[in-house]
Length: 150
Image (cartoon, rainbow, N blue to C red; front, side, top):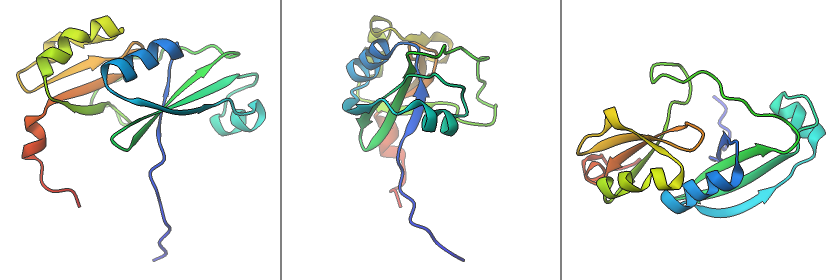
């Protein structure tokens, strides 16, 4: 069996408004700005399988070694697809542990997100970012229950 070196790079998230999303992810969830770029349309269009012109702007944010790419378009309209269900194949959510779940939930709306109120318990809750992406928030006590990472 052949083995190739594989290194995690990032998770991409299409956003409708870069500034609004940065305020949410940086201000509420503690991500930090890393870098940004505006790649050329031709190569990017081929990679993303979208018709040009695109005007892609990619903003990279980092949290605990996890890299989140916020993708927005200045020359291409973005659209909202159907709401994703947790049993739909594919990426369902991001998950973060927080030291004060109740305190965090009280701030979500002020950063442009929303709390999925029917999911809230003492230990966990789902929230949505300004574009509707699901984010699971877990109490820090969850970290103590995890087995050691390999």
